[in-house]
Length: 171
Image (cartoon, rainbow, N blue to C red):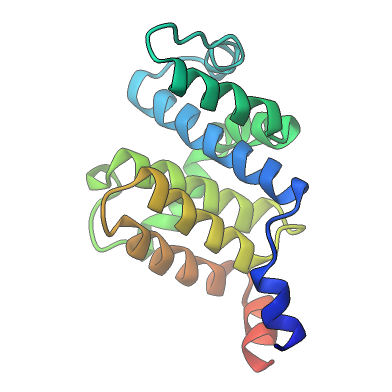
């Protein structure tokens, strides 16, 4: 087995798991913000004190995700996606086949997170930003929503990180 293939089949590191958990929480928080217009500080406080008494299994999962999540990344995404919303939306809109307002709210939250990471987090490789968006869409989105998210984030990566994308495609 090649070293590259072997690397791809390894279980995610604790850091990767923590970042994935942070993104999962951020999608839910941004979705809540989009739907309610609540202040992000309030949403974050609610997430940190979440109590679900009627569904023990869901509560245990929530506690586990909050426990392992990269708290700094969760906080950054939760507060900076709304902060840069207009800029993120302006980068996403030209790539869509419909109006931004017509997108599914979960997919919109995922696209905003992906656009944020592609534009503001140069430490996150573009492929990771796209893959994380796809995985979030598989978890939270509609049946084929991950395909749509993949297409939009791939086009956005070419626009925002053309040198990185070109270099990766030449390999």
